[in-house]
Length: 352
Image (cartoon, rainbow, N blue to C red):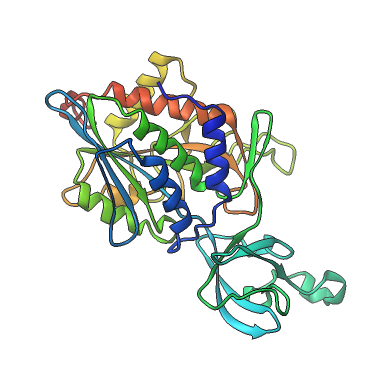
């Protein structure tokens, strides 16, 4: 059984502190490849930059199970050098522009420090204060002589990983929590399946890596490991929040539906029954928007039965997110137990 201890926490810290905006996932890919040494017979990097891992099981009639976790994160791309260390930029992935002014960032391969700058509030007009600051009014500022960066370089939030007892704080829990969980599953792969692990690229800009990886693997079924927003804060009117997506502390979130996928009901039942049999707390993600790599995987080739399981975290796609250690532990436990219990008979049953 895989466990989460100091080694796994240090690995999560290393992954979260890495900079890997969509299309430039090299830092995380390097960590993943290093961690996989000695744990799989086939590890390769495809044309898009996905890390594709095969770990064969033993016995007859083994299911080919694809597990996917994306390596990329939201961030920024420098697009124009305005001189004097000021750069126009574009967002990469879904980012709320309202929360950007004043945020510290790290830029390029050398992690050069910078700040997202905007005009101070006391120098704006009353009318300007009523409106959202447009992206073209913001600049990434490294100061004159601050270092060598250029248009095309990526930038990420400069937040460093922290642990406060049962609470974890970092940028990019979406989806470094999935990456570290998938690494542990590869290292502790159950023998009853052929585990096909895809550490994918460019999820935040359209699930592009997952589409290619699913075509390559052609699996019998797929489970996507991700992190999902927990919209569980109290309502502004002090009434009970009944529009939450997931909640911290209630365990891994099993997807029934999201903006891109209707999960295979057989896999939803299998995960739910596994959780009940093993005494693992779980929750069901509220249907609605958003999506995971499952949105691309389930439509690959002639179709792939797919489901997503995510670790809930607050403040997704911002400079800092909060997650619970127990939710991560229970996610890993649930996935490993569900894989151990998989048999070909599951897919022979009625889809429902």
